[in-house]
Amino acid sequence: MENLTQQKCTACHKDAPRVTEEEVAQLKPQIPDWEIVEHDGVAHLERTYKFDDFLQALDFTCRVGAEAEQEGHHPALLTEWGKVKVSWWTHAIEGLHRNDFIMAAKTDQVLTGQ
Image (cartoon, rainbow, N blue to C red; front, top):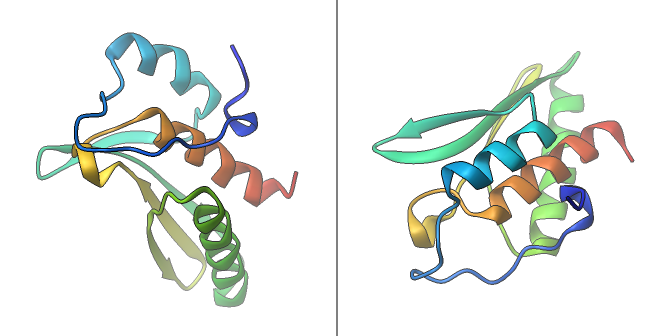
């Protein structure tokens, strides 16, 4: 299977399919530190990153935002002192799409600077 960080997001519309349980089983091992959680019945990928101070957290937030803008797929970002919570889901389908897994992997890549 192709590495998620090498893939590009595709345009998503309200009829796009959500990932299946089989797809989740294939994709999730590439983003082991992410959790699948539900908010108001909608599945999200979430991870909280820890930093030494607010400026490091803010810098990470900005770099994730730039990657999101480049891919045309945008997360919820909560930046606090020493941490950033990132949530990916696809609004149009009210659930998880392959794009969310791609962007979770790219978010991890932003952290490592690869």
